[in-house]
Length: 325
Image 1 (cartoon, rainbow, N blue to C red):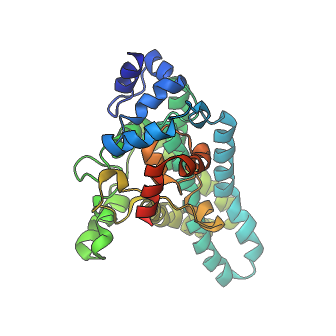
Image 2 (cartoon, rainbow, N blue to C red; image 1 turned 90 degrees about the vertical axis):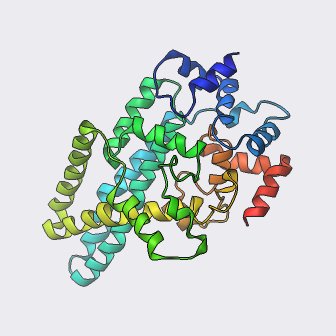
Image 3 (tube, rainbow, N blue to C red; image 1 turned 135 degrees about the horizontal axis):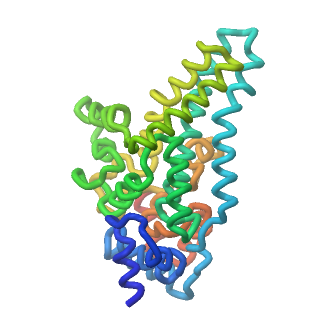
């Protein structure tokens, strides 16, 4: 009975509220009920059953330590703030080279913003704490950095899990991005452009003020060392141009051109991604995105081990991997 209650409590339309969810989030058996509430019930249930057939394997759903949260966030913010100084200041005597390097650096900074948004994604799945208050606090801090609202994002993202690729209910990804399997066409590209550039997920007034404050502080620090012109073009390119582009690339790697598949097969793994691609786009172990959609309560830091475990135990999972390649 508790498992059923937990599954209902953790449903896609339920915000963080109180003790019952904290019990469900902390109890491995109750967390597993969440798996059956998130996507295609038939094939998904079979994979979940195979995954936990021998023993409960609670280590796979154990929360990531908070030290992992702070270390990942600290590295991303460090690179956002200090990498322009480390790369561009030595090139001050070569302005043409400095400008070119600045364009590439702006793209890299955009990947660090997305890395922070991927930590926010982990928070939406209760990956770091069983305390709803702690999760909300951390989520609001990260939302201020990337310019969203944590509660709104969580509801939209869990809808994405439950309704992946559905035109009217999956608001976390561009429907037209999933439809690009039949080629690039203007009528597809313009909605994608509007989704990622014109209509980004906005936060409430407080979050927007905090986001503007964060960006202002970032620009101010860069101006002190790089000057007005360099700092403004560097940060403007990053936030206004490259960050939406990086989101498009990331969503393409995860789900692009898969609309003609069954819902549970509209995600892909990229386990062979090289070191550079993992650093730029898969800093959250997103190269195992199919596995994440099958078992969303597994924290990202445990996805590689869970992938190997399923390859050795689950015929269904191996078949899915073979079909997507």
